[in-house]
Image (cartoon, rainbow, N blue to C red; front, side, top):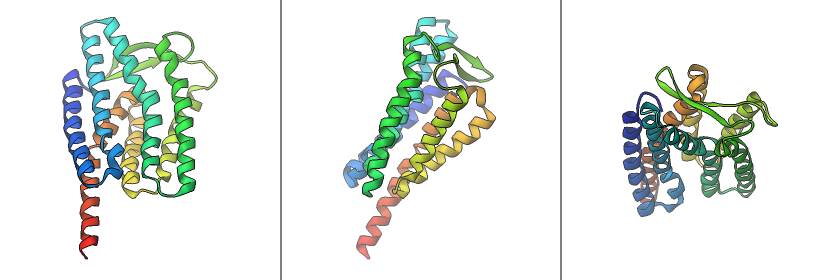
Length: 226
């Protein structure tokens, strides 16, 4: 995330509280949204991880920086590509779209491994060269090479994100549209630190889930009463 370890841990705390509220509401009122509701908690883990990256970098603890960077990129490169379509699948009501999201889960899993395994192994094409501060944000410098060019990888990554918007669930689409909007803005304004910056704004976007779930529950209650 941008700025500092304090900001990363602060956002993680906020997300943890927001995620707990979302989860409690979903368990009590509508378990359909449970996977979506716990998403802020997962983002909290990622933001806390980047807080550790900041500590490692600032204190010149190279092993800590490397290990926490690998864990942060696990979320950015692999986990979200798999988790988000799983959430969409759990909310889907149309049969053909459920099959479609199963396919996206598989594609996200395979492509995510393609992106992250070299980072984990710390060798070969696409491995993590260095974690540094670029401006006021962390930037994760990954080597080139491999079967796909950098542009091709960016296109596939973005395309999967767009395809998630095909969910039939209006609440999920509103949430994910905001995440994609932040992704587009940060890509063109903070390209060097895009991974870190977008993950931060995507994380903050998950707090909107609480208000979406609350409003959805109120709307259903009003319809039942009327």
